[in-house]
Length: 173
Image (cartoon, rainbow, N blue to C red):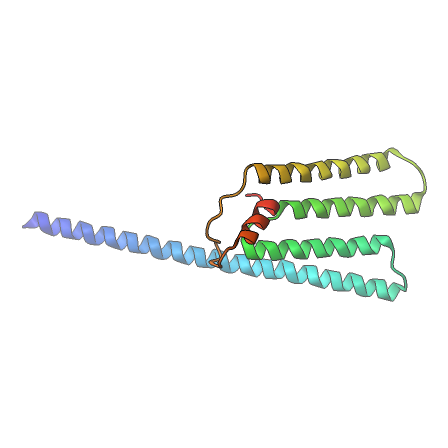
């Protein structure tokens, strides 16, 4: 009879270990998701606040330049990127490239409007913009050639064809 008692005790220990492992994994997932949502809300709020403050600064200045408008576009792209990441749990690579292109364009316009001198810096920034545009083409080609597997959304929301296409076009793991 001691053999079956030992077997029962081992089963009980194994079940307890499995139960504790499941509890720890669930608690860890809960804490990570809570941090994830909190960080997304913080980034979104900071982006919105910075956009509003930049806009109010433009109104206070009395005139708006192309440089200012491009800055607002950067804030818009960052907010859209946070929104897409919140919905799909994937980082939209193309949006980051758009932000970089807009930032370099803003730098180029600012440099040209303030210095009025031709320089290699203008050529280098223009080349960087061209490389980023080519990177968008590569990302688009790769996402159409090697589409993401359409499965259930990690957030538990229903997915449709449009969501899957948007994810395939705009995200990369």
